[in-house]
Amino acid sequence: MSFYDIDQHGVTQSILTTYLTCRQKCAHSLSGLSTGRPEPDYFWFGDMIHWLLEHHYQGNSPEVSDWIEYRRSLSRKDADKFNPKKASQDQANLIAVGEILFDVYKWTWKPTDRKIKWKGLEVEFTQPFEYAPGEWVLLRGKRDGLFQWRRRGPEGKRLYTFETKTISQDKGSAKMRQLEFDFQNLFYLTATEDEVAARCWGTYYNLIRKPGSKQKVNETPEEYRDRMRKEIEKKPTYYTHRYECAYSLRQTRVFRKHLAALLTEFVPWVRNGCSPAIPNSSVCLTMGQCTYLDACASGKPRGYVTRNRVHPELSED
Ligand code: SF4
Image 1 (cartoon, protein in one colour):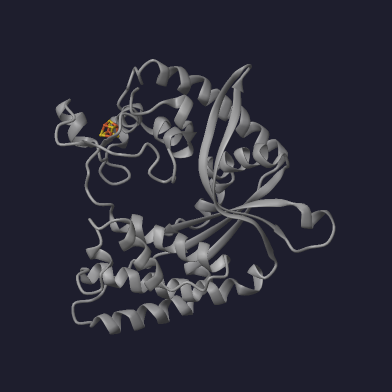
Image 2: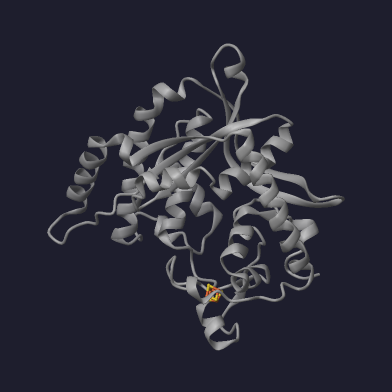
């Protein structure tokens, strides 16, 4: 059996967006190709925020030190960056900024959060989807949350998905317009609607904004953290922002058609050995340098390793 078996592993939104971005990149990824390098800092920063929020909403009063313990227990290989005595100053500062953001988030959203009734937090889904008559594929993913408002009447029965993202750049109102047809939101919403056999009315998009400012040359770590705390506390709803994205029936129906059309193309492509794996050289450098640049440039995947999981973001393959 090859590394990726579509019938067993299903499709995630990230596989499909990679396919839309560059088929060669998708083919490399589905063959399990990886640089084997440790995850970049922005990746574990997002993991820290997700973990803290999950445990916060479960009522566990988590501390950043709990998350550090958890991360160190997962992997001895990259435990040093979570060890306060061995981490670089940049890594220690990033953890400190995450802690400040988490504090500010809790008091900023406490009044709104009291009105939320959680139906699930950080739940993985595996949902069959019929993309063509008699043709099924598993939609896979992990929802940050599913909730209803504590309201009387029909409004209190409406379901919403909850999605947290950590970002560093301000995309302002353009982001709001993009969310109107955001692939991940609508992919999760579609899978959830089929899973719970009920309509989902939208997504609460929870943005945690990482300040771009770094420690200055003449600044001590304590001074940097004080400056960050003041900056974040001054603009709490800028650094921890929520967008309410309501999706109409028309929008969700249109997305279902788009998803079906995409899968009608994608599934046979996978069954054909991910061929043709057309490279899209216009995106190699647009979201940072593509991890497969060396493989594409030389035509050989030399120096790469095979990763051990098909969906690193999910607990089970
Ligand atoms: S280097 Fe460019 S062409 Fe190659 S996989 Fe990455 S994005 Fe695609």
